[in-house]
Image 1 (tube, rainbow, N blue to C red):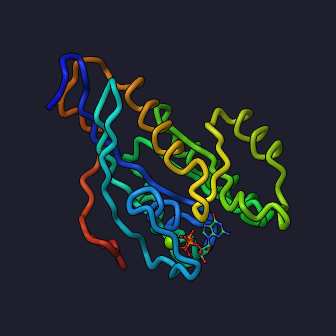
Image 2: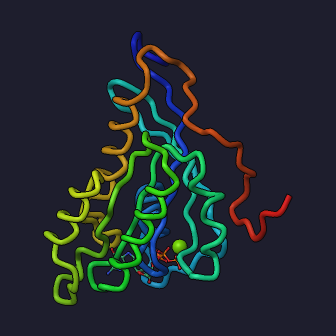
Length: 200
Ligand SMILES: Nc1nc2c(ncn2[C@@H]2O[C@H](COP(=O)(O)OP(=O)(O)OP(=O)(O)O)[C@@H](O)[C@H]2O)c(=O)[nH]1
Ligand SMILES: [Mg+2]
């Protein structure tokens, strides 16, 4: 039951990033507490929902986990359009994935939603021995671009809940007080675990 003064927020969240960086793994760790060494590559996009209760608000996330493979790039705007939060993921053991992450940040900035809560996630923090991107590099880039930065591991669960709680907190802070049923979606999206096409 909603407490006096608490808010109900419905927020669209999109995950973007190179293939294999661990977007699906982060979502499955967060929602189901599971991790798979051989996670299948996402086709098109996958949809999940999860509710997080904070003291100040209840946040229902509608999560679009996009496919990182380049051939799906053109679908991405459909998923980030109207999003309240965007999570851009790279893999600390791949400098290429960090370069790709910066491209995603630029694309999101060009789309120009000034209220978008944007997070840069350095995933696979457990692969310290294979690290190609220093923590400071990610942190510096995030700071320069006004992003929240966090290092995670979907494998060990390091910082995964923290990532989503931090987003929820920021959304709660940004949304007007005493609103109930506040909807942070701007666009109605079709439902379904996988979307292959998007015409019409
Ligand atoms: N060591 C380690 N492996 C991880 C971690 N997160 C994901 N992986 C592995 O990395 C591979 C890719 O993970 P996915 O979650 O499928 O990556 P994705 O970003 O969803 O990839 P696409 O769907 O192709 O865009 C899988 O084999 C995972 O087991 C992590 O934090 N640490
Ligand atoms: Mg995936």
